[in-house]
Length: 257
Image (tube, rainbow, N blue to C red; front, side, top):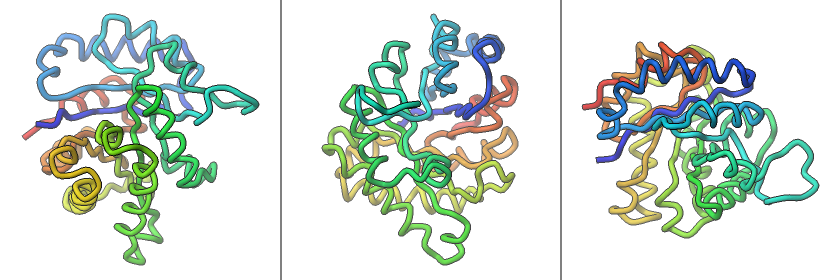
């Protein structure tokens, strides 16, 4: 059984003081259930870079994992404004989101640069969370699977199969991020199922069936249970709802069939 992963992407929100307060509130909600959760789910938060040190301290003794929202593919150099793997690992970061739709569409990161980031995350013994997803225009044109599987192939093609098997994939339809619109559970499962089949072609059935595929796109306490009921949805990449302890805790407590 694949453990569910509920990952909170804080995006460009929360100062270090605010991040500490959110972690304290989240731990008050979740720490008492840590042993029960350990059987079938994990929890992760991905703060902004400047908030990571404060959050790392606040997470001491907790089972909540620490992630980052992005990472450069070089370990050092003249890359003003970026951060490297050694910098993140210093604070205990274990997971790194790469290829988020906002990085692709606002900051124009390409499949090639995302693949290089994923490879660097894997090389540095952290877990990449590769985001894939289509725009509304691409969906309306019937290109969802073409776009998603091309992005998947480009990302995982940058690493050996054994490293690809340790990655996490997050399907996030761009049209459902921050819009209040959400793919129906059946729509999400259709894409997750296609991703699973593509992973089997790339990695073999045994390894592919161990890869977690998260759904991201306006996940809320109200819709999380129906999403998690689908066989190939292995957790959620949560944006706005992860910024409040009560709503994120409810998502983490999702019913798992």
